[in-house]
Amino acid sequence: MPESITITDNRSGTSIEIPIENGGIDAAEWRRFLPGVWFCDPGLATTAATTSSITELDGDNGVLRYRGYPIEQLAEQSSFLEVAYLLVHGELPTRAQHDEWVYEITHHTFVHDNFRKRIYDAFHYDAHPMGLLTSGVAALSTFYPEAKEIENPKIRMEQIVRLIAKMPTLAAAAYRHSQGQPYVFPDNLLGYPENFLNMMYRMGGEYEIHPVLGKAMEILLILHADHEQNCSTTAARVVGSSHADPYTSVAAACAALYGPRHGGANEAVINMLDEIGDYSDVDSFMKTVKSGENRLMGFGHRVYKNYDPRAKIIKKSAYDVFEVTGKNPRLDLALKIEEIATNDSYFIDRRLYPNVDFYSGLIYQSMGFPTEMFTVLFAIGRTPGWLAHWNEMMEQGSRIARPRQLYTGPEMRDFVPLSER
Ligand code: ACO
Image 1 (cartoon, rainbow, N blue to C red):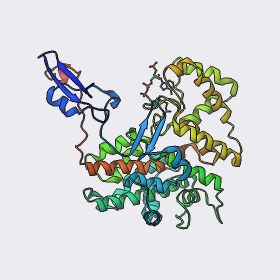
Image 2: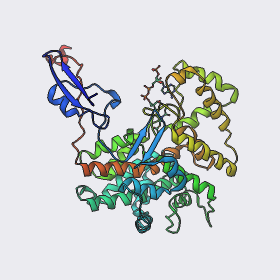
Image 3: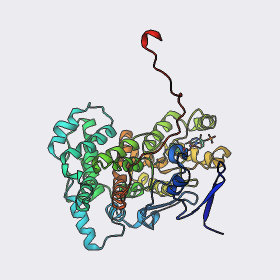
Image 4: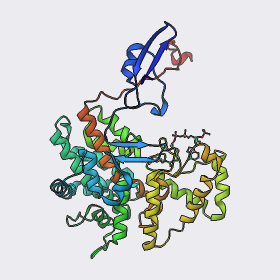
């Protein structure tokens, strides 16, 4: 059977055969054959916006691989910075490459003092930390004007290192600002997740990081590191396609991540569990979900029509964390919701399963993070993914993102002066 599709234009009776390559067809062939006839694809649900060799996601079978490596193996055996290298460079680093990468990232964690004095301090004390982070990342672009030289691979890589290095610094500073606490400088002697936790929580003398919590943080960062053409990565690519610098593109990604349908869902899960309140109220809440009155946050995914493999790993990690911190009281509510949903035809028929955000919020909360910080944590983890895709797009030489529309407004009509309306 030929690996192709045939399209016939019934107006003229002409046909074209287009080969199927890598599971898709070349839209340029369609455009040439049917000029002025556009796909109407809200949410780009049927559109492959690019080819990419970074992350493979098989939503039907619950498979996630970075550069070919299964997420389960990476979460178990790798470190976040090693995974960041893999995403950005395409291969696992040798020992020498690894050590140089870690050294470079560790030595680019500081931000200019004007950040603290002029940028972050200008925000209200109760500003949402995602607002600070998004603005902070955009502001970084003004500190590194050379970043505009996006055609230069060496300069691109310097900004990639800076961004991965500085995200935890900006994120922790956003939290300390909201608490009215002085900022903590990065500590070059600590690993990446430990340095972040230290900048978050250190209050005077030494801040002891429990190894189980450090490991859980590392796993959560790895699980969030990439997820192919998701909403925030697409935002980064769209902005990057206009040849804006990488800080501006990543700020766009942060803005997209902020929303409750995307990275804001982990915060929304905790709010939802708090709203349900009591174990005995879960059943009535689930009825409101089925009637369309409420949406079950942390459930459902555009691509996964099976259990999100990240949710499985996080659920296991949650139990490890609770051994140290004590059980999060919302866990029982979450488990009951999952049990009802996995046995109810509403969720089964729509193939709605827990996604990465369903259990991550419970861990974050038990580790002492306020809910407003959850999406910020996601942003730290996703930064290497955003940058790997941005860099791949630059290497590929992309066109500017500029979709079409099907116009449904009024026909041409003459202007009526205000006095005559
Ligand atoms: N609760 C209840 N019903 C749902 C849910 C949900 N969480 N998600 C989807 N559905 C239902 C829809 O109502 C729809 O039902 P219908 O066919 O009767 O109209 C059907 O399932 C299909 O849903 P869509 O909204 O068309 O799915 P889409 O792919 O557009 O949306 C999304 C995916 C945004 C993730 C959605 O499932 C959702 O809002 N989930 C809750 C928010 C969430 O957890 N987001 C995090 C996603 S993971 C991430 O971004 C890191």
